[in-house]
Image 1 (cartoon, protein in one colour):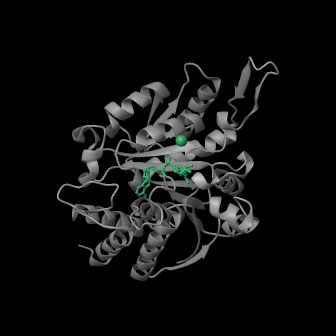
Image 2 (cartoon, rainbow, N blue to C red):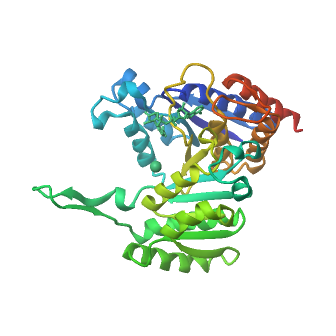
Length: 358
Ligand code: NAI
Ligand code: MG
């Protein structure tokens, strides 16, 4: 299969980790007989420096014509003083919005050699394998009015959703559960919020189309608790924007390894943007020591969710796991009796594991 992939390295360690992902994808292409064509474009602080805007039109145009997009990270202290409208993050929000990427998918699964770094006991986190499906374009973050009265003593934010917006994310939840362990946890606050009551009705309607998936409704506060007491009970969690933002950050610390976590933002036709959960790590940028595995695992998600290449995606995930099992890790990770290596070295070791099929 021939695929057009846009690379948006962005800032800080972005370029280093994007380079690693590209090398791994080239190896997968050779091994499986695909052709991946890469086009690199500017975003974030890098784009501000070169083109005076965090999201140049050229970048948007290129992304519109792409099969998928890989993004490193944006931001850093250098741009902390630029006006709010021009900040590097505007590039990221802008590209998600202009591509209509409404579903954020975040897998949370630990690797055994790293579980000792989890804030949870190993036996609690051990068998956890969760996918959080979060609505990304509606809800409280985008509702109007969102304002303060003139005297400054009263405020309003608006939580608004249409049936259409709820249906498409809920379907994404069911579809995701169907190709995993077939259990869907729908998270809402239906005891208080009208929006949640419509959400719950839609989930129950859609459930009829997915008889193979078991559905459970959980209130958001109870879900926050269960994520740390019983994380292995979850398969797919589907929820609206604000709840998803909070729960996915909570879930992201369960495995104890920020540098390992991938994420995806997709729409119905499969086009998606893939990026690691971590930021641009300006404190270690340019030193060749950052961890590229979250970016490499994001590339694996791209193969799975945008290209339907399940075998290729699993192969990358297996190679990353094997590399850790062999004790290799970057400076941000600890493995007992392991060997610390740099960005290029760990990428090489992933490649060796890819081709050795050990
Ligand atoms: P961060 O995730 O960049 O860094 C937090 C800590 O983790 C740092 O000590 C960093 O060195 C370390 N770290 C993160 N990723 C790593 C990796 N792959 N390998 C090794 N160590 C790693 O978060 P922080 O410091 O809060 O933000 C730094 C900048 O990144 C800010 O400008 C922030 O706005 C931006 N940011 C961008 C995001 C994005 O592009 N999606 C997400 C989060 C933050
Ligand atoms: Mg957040």
